[in-house]
Image 1 (tube, rainbow, N blue to C red):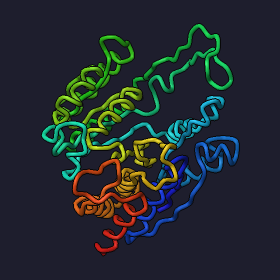
Image 2 (cartoon, rainbow, N blue to C red):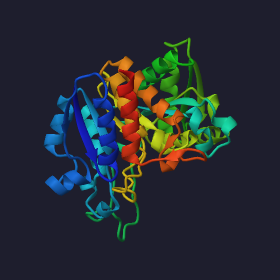
Image 3 (cartoon, rainbow, N blue to C red):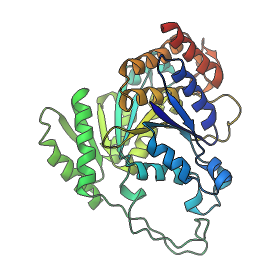
Image 4 (cartoon, rainbow, N blue to C red):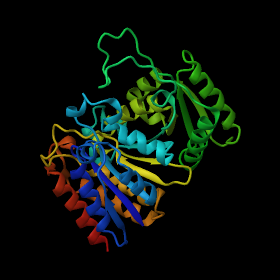
Length: 359
């Protein structure tokens, strides 16, 4: 099982190191190869996604990704900014389906910003379409300086677009996921204002005819955002476009106690994927050893399940994380009264120790 390891920037190297540690504590054989990406790649090669890194990612069975970005690169030409690396990987690898589970572990209900009774037992899956929408719309108009800013400009625009095949394929993924869970799918759009999302709503409704056993509901994105914080457990699977999914999944992350607990998988049509925590590079805490590695470790569990066909190992890894939380260990972002606060490395060590104890 060949895994491309792309730590990236900020806290990326710290959290990825702990996920690799957890993988190595399993009774499996991995071929791990590391490459630079994002700002680290720009510093080394002059580009955030070097050809060698892209080649490695394409040849691997799965990609374990950390995070990219740093404020110091904000004045670079947009095409050279670290964030272009993840957009490029999604496009080049055909990663169109982003799975973001939002699960509130029983031990973390007090860490959520909502009342415990609203989030206890929460288990939502948000499926975000990843390669269309306004982030990839063409043509793209921009009157700006080389660094991507707009000195003296009078306007700027981006084009929102979706094709029927793009909507159909993400709808099939979402209906199939709902079928394996609670049998309920909520499609989130803005059909009352945007033609693109009236089209989205129509196509999703057409695909629904092939899944009569799944209940389909439609919500406008503003209402969906409100309902996520009002009564989040009403949802089972949510499917939406690229931009709405980006925003809603981060909002859902806080229901779980911390975005540091939210893993993600970005998959192609054959379940080859890129796995990363949903949080960013957090340059303000990089190198301090305080970042929460659990989202990255749980992303590695998703990698085992979806791309590497190692369901038992995935379950073991998730159980190890659960055991560590039950044992009272917390990083600072999920700390509560009576727990023991530990750093990034100590949390990774604890997960690895539980895995070794399971042997």
